[in-house]
Image 1: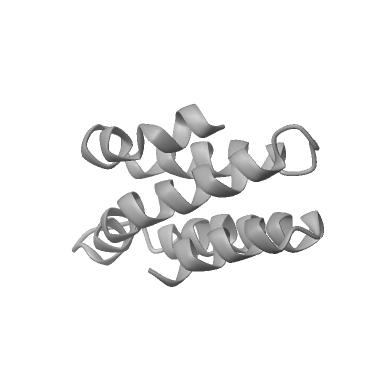
Image 2: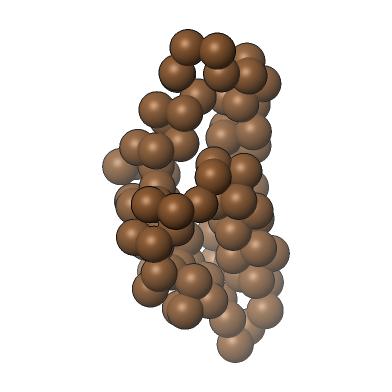
Length: 101
């Protein structure tokens, strides 16, 4: 999970938005695993901070699929739900910061 977050700038520059959403979904699914909880939270924070502007720009671009806002909203909701279910203040803080930026 930390590995995925460490490459967030690469994801931002080379991955299509759908792939980034899949990375976020993977990280959210890793949160319930005790050994990966903290790393998944950090990874989500890094990915959201690096890629958030790209996702927003892609969704707002002319000719973009109108459902892309739904996909982004769903990914953010899943990330926050995973963080809240972890009962870890650090994970909640990391994901909230990533979503807010």
